[in-house]
Image 1 (spheres, rainbow, N blue to C red):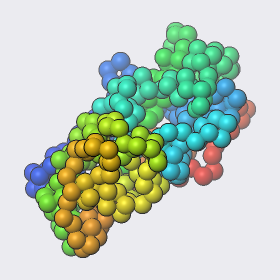
Image 2 (image 1 turned 180 degrees about the vertical axis):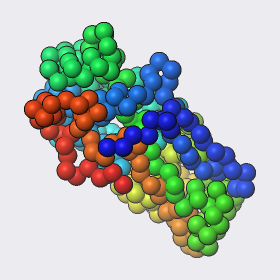
Image 3 (image 1 turned 135 degrees about the horizontal axis):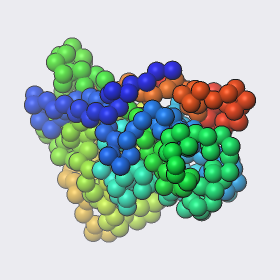
Length: 343
């Protein structure tokens, strides 16, 4: 078990001036003053993240769609909900989510604490009233003990459940990519084609106008000619600029999984979007050669980082609380997912 207690309370994002608009990512997201990220709270949040009693049928958890072995995504083009229903949007990844300024592709809430109850309230996702979820947790002897240690003197409410889950999610970080090392001074970290792609990204292609900073997002909302639902007609809905870290590892792209290959996304932007009916995306066609597109792909591959769970080596095990073996046996089965990979 390893704990990075000191660095968990720091947020040290370094900025480099050598490449306009780009910056390396370092450190960890800061925990808010009203929800400090103690190791005990973070590990409780990890247990709750994989807790299936937070869904109506007791078969789904946050980890059902946000699988650690799949970079906290689900590996699907779009999310699947209850009753084998394909949803309108894809499952967002959670790596580096602690630095996001808003949640969901439409930015409907600002914090992880506000986001936590939304999947429960959705009848196609976990379909359980947060109050009922809190009651289930409050009736569990193991959770009674753990909450008493993390939140002494307080009754178990969904607000506290959300705080614990949010504290855990802020520890999920991916950095130390080839680009990070290059921006920090290692000029051998990028291959020549990736350097050419970076120059295109920040120059002729103009990608950096929206994909900038350590997370490669401006945190703003834009219309890029992608329909609200696959196969539908574009109607001008704006969506949050997705960060590009680990972009080469995703199973689909755009808010709704419209494209299955990263090269298709480059083609989309090169032709200025795909908006019939007079709707004009916020992008202009680009004159990109085949070599330009290959160089951009090389640069985007350089954004794959090292995935860090800064708190524990495996999810759900409450070692930090020094509970008895028989109590550990009652920990959520989903939390012991053998597919978990802490890279």
